[in-house]
Image (cartoon, rainbow, N blue to C red; front, side, top):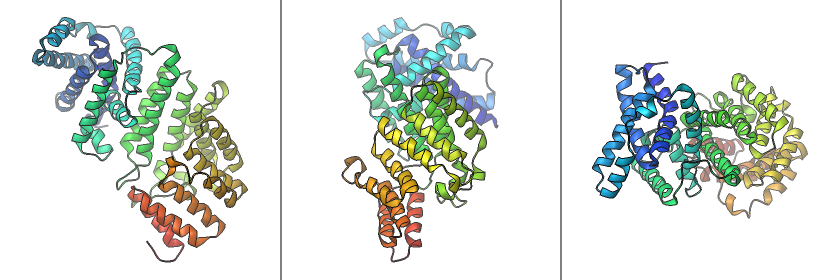
Length: 417
């Protein structure tokens, strides 16, 4: 690993620890977050050349507190300046904590930061952006690049999110016991969104954005360490590992998409597959079953099949039937229809899809057209399947998906769009 890569990895791990320490001490999330970002930037510039300091955590805290003090001194509001100046103290007490105290505080701080960034007052898009910046340690420019939006747009989104958190009066504390399940679920949903955007980019020339899937797995692994007894946390981590294991086989050298049934499973990464299967097996034995665990179980069945034709579709169908009872939503129905088609025939799958035509959540979604086209192709209705693939290609904003769908339509003959 190069020096720059080692520094980047270290900063990613230290970012939530430093921010958590400052927010816990000074109770000013927006000001502390700005100060930590400046400290991270300074480290990213200086450490590759000067070397990583003996106490990198202490170095970052010292610089961040200095930046925070500067912000207070330049604040035009005398009341706020005096109130914060009275609260500020040298960074020594934060730096000097013993290893045991540091580890305990870091675990709590990281979890509280995730709860804060996933506050219900924020939109999902704002939750994702703020989580990547505050907990993931990514810069605004990196987040903007990952989501293919201008840096100014992402900066405004993050700024608004911090203002909304302040306006909501969100506290840097564990939520009440009765709110705990919903807050954990919100954190998992945000991590799930980050992973999905990285695994199949919603727009742009590339099918995958590795930096997002990598960050989602890292953060979910951290949450699993913090909450080892939460079954859905383990389920989500297993789902990510099992799904990301297919990444090497999902694209051809030219970047074009390779669907699951056509992938060379010899290219799948075995280490995350084994870890994911072991994790979901242990979790299903002891935890209350939830949607992430069921999705991970489905991914495990796919992973255990050496070839596509070896897939245990009856088991997958049973799992989707259970998933629809536990967490009904149109995407689950879409995948359920594929499993029905594989077990009972495509016409029964098409009947299941018919109910989605009036679901406003699926209006105009290219995946409904694509799945219907696939099932129509299975029935032998080439003309209808071709029209479905063409419609799906027009609706997707992902260039690799569009090219794949157009190639499916072309393979069925007839005139193009």
